[in-house]
Length: 279
Image (cartoon, rainbow, N blue to C red; front, side, top):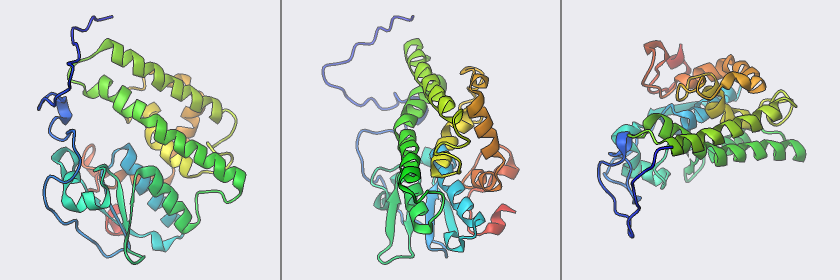
């Protein structure tokens, strides 16, 4: 193991430029950096996002609702370029004081209702449209168990494993080993659960599957962090089965394209304002 010479100072001070790829957007204070009004489209639901794992949770959810015939779930999806600091505009901060995507504004109510944090948005939409969340107490509770599991677990995968394995300016053996072990433990948790039932909450696809698949399903398929081989993802056979089944859903395929600005050009739909944008 590498012996790190760094010794924390008595009082931490921000050192501009020390954050690697994210040095221009990471900062130790909240609030807006510039004044900018967010655009508003014709639909009641206005989504401001990017096709990261947290972002695609919501576009997948909205496309699933539309596939179920919930026409009131039509939405405008506006691109937030987090690498350029769009999330720190005054308009975005008004919707999400935490300056993280995704953020949703529901203009079907008066005054318009802001919803932020991806898990909160999934739950809000499920309850608003009466879909993808069981109504019986046992099914609802199990769904929320796994939804909140994802919200608590993913920071170890993203800010932990993903950051040190992919983005950190230096490869730190201790950090990579620490978070790889946790990522594999989490995959084992999922694999054991999915050995018991086809979906996380039981026999029915739900918001729990959308939330968890957007991170862990894409992870084992190699589309997040390109780390499937490193993590021996093939060992998690039940997660693999579940991940591949969900990846084939038409609504998932559509949702993955929205607010996407990288990869194959045919898969990029930076903004979505009608179903025809995905044709």
